[in-house]
Image (tube, rainbow, N blue to C red; front, side, top):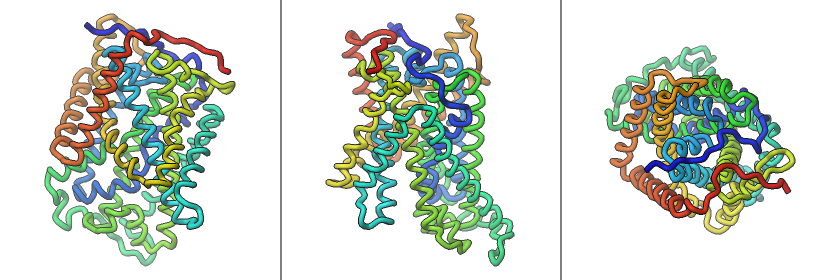
Amino acid sequence: MTEVPTITTTTPGLHPGLTRRQISMMGLGGAIGAGLFVGSGEAISIAGPAVLVSYLVAGTIVILVMSMLAEMVAAHPSSGAFSSFAQRAMGRSAGSAVGWLYWIQLVVVIAAEATGAAGIVAGWTPGFPAWAWVLVFVAALTAVNLFGVRNYGRFEFWFAAIKVFAIIAFLVVGACAILGVIPNVPAVGFGNLFAHGGFVPQGIAGVAAAVLIVVFAFGGTEVVAIAAAESDDPANNIRRIVREVMVRILIFYLGSILVIVAVLPWDSPEVKVGPFSAVLATLHLPGVDLVMSGIVVLALLSAMNANIYGASRMAYSLGERGLAPLAAIRTSEKDVPYVAVLASVAFGFVSVIINWAIPQDVLGVLLNIVGSTVIVIWTATAISQIVLRARADRSGEPMPMRMWGFPWLSWACLVLLAGVIAMAMIDPAARMQLLLTIGLTSALLVGARLTRGSSRPGVLRVPRK
């Protein structure tokens, strides 16, 4: 029998403080990170110029998932987003498992991003070790998230804007190189797209393998569904936000990859190591490596900042629905869920000790466990939308926004996700990640079942102090 959940569809303890522009930038900040600046080189080395097809396939999945999320957010805005929707569609256990899975993933990723940024900056400051930089970054961004959602929104807006500006500049410089308008640099044209083995040098298998890498690079866009609950008009904002974020991400991702594979041979060793730096180096621009390192650091810190926000709001929502300790819904005078923020960054502070004692060893293991979380969350989102939309259509429930092409496009998204899962099971490294994530999800489901009787339905408010 399906569990009948009691769900709050608003966030009474959190007050609107984010603008549509800020949420849009948060989506970009969450998705445009090391996965683009560094990880894209790995995808190119696997698929060659045909990696553009891999990005199109992954981009299609993301557009469909975000469209489904937008429909559900418009109808039932909640800081729990996809976790709340999973609970509405599939019951308390599913909502709890999806929420905790997302929170655990972000907690680990926050520590990993701090570690990655610290490793780069430590190279600039030999007298200041990496573990000390981890402490600085975690403490600073914790403070930003405790200042209030309005200040956080401003901070993240400019954080993400720097990355966006860097990518736009890269696209302009790359286009000039392709067209030959840079002095003393001959036009490269598009010959590299079809040389060195052709457009699909590694065959369809290479394109499919690259999809696995690209899908995970798009992770982070779902934070807009969480943030929309803290805007003044979630139903109307989410529609425009999703459209803006998706168009910009596809332009930035596809445009950047097109520039890379056009300017340089896809099999160049430099492309795999640092594709953006490799392109800029061909133009003989001074200080390229330092500039790109700085941009990667900003990308990591921006994504880390967005992830602290997303993790804390998910923890707040879990507490709000009786799926986490009551303390998770305590808010400060600035309406910040400060306990949830501190709980979400706690492992980041623990990672300071890890970086001092055994750098990256533990984090590498943990990242493997949560490596395929995005696939589980997107699949749960697709299933939730299919169930909730069909339920709303049967009952005649008015919906502020309806996803186009239902149910065909929703089912098509599930088929594409199933294809990604099948490809992951074929690849040894991806298979291990997927199985570990499935094991964690199963454990969370069992835990939710075992604690079902002790949960509190609905929302409980507690004093702020």
